[in-house]
Image 1 (cartoon, rainbow, N blue to C red):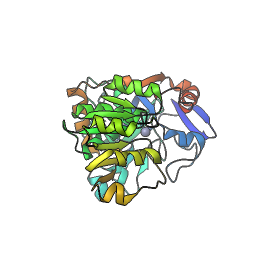
Image 2: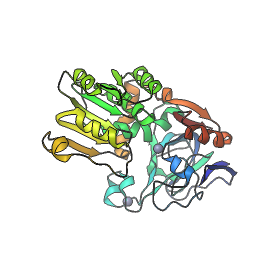
Image 3: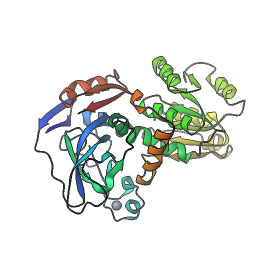
Image 4: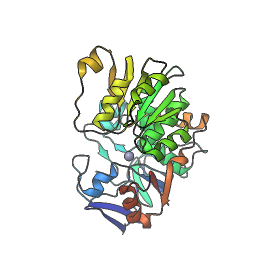
Length: 340
Ligand SMILES: [Zn+2]
Ligand SMILES: [Zn+2]
């Protein structure tokens, strides 16, 4: 089977390897779609965001979907032919985090595409419990996007308790922020999108944002006030990880507002008294989603007829992986998806 490796230094290796066989309580998935994510760029450059990564050791790709093609012994809940997306975290299965379905908080977790073989291949093997059933109406491309991109933003929106009374600002209009617009609109919020790039703001409006602003333009705070009827936003999500955007999100919410940081970021400086304490803001972090949330994610996608395929600006075959990663790196694509 074809498989893709990122050993670092912008190298992309497409290798022919034997397909893996499923062990006990594992299934083999014929992968049909697998997304490239900004976090893959850390492998591409050779400075992995996760600890314990051995460059080029594992097949990359942590946002796959496909159908169950072979069952290992002891699999009870899946059949051959079932259509599934894959939860990226391989947990121990028995610790408190794993029992709650938040495998990415398991102390010994491995991440597909980083510290275990991932989805940029014709086949992959994962534990039965990592399979997320997808509705018939969801294409494999949409299912792949429904995991890390949409699922992460759905989980953040849920933690922010969005409703029809919410005014939400989202900073950073890459695939994450764009997914956030779709999730927040489906939950009833009014949404203002922030990005310095004009094409991204246009795309945000096309996806349903009520307003799109350049965060670097003069008068942007006045525009936010006007959008929120003089009040300030009730909620904000930063997808950029940029300290200026993180601070702007804190400044833009009204007293008792809620802010979620989703974009990865090593260090930032905020003004706790002014931005948090006196405004009595809740600032939360949000990272991926738990297994139990996926049924809700799938339900929302179907009931609100959310078309995630519009986020896939480019599709590639596995053989085109070197070109795909190069174009993604040069930001000539937004969400790029391998289609097998
Ligand atoms: Zn990702
Ligand atoms: Zn565990």
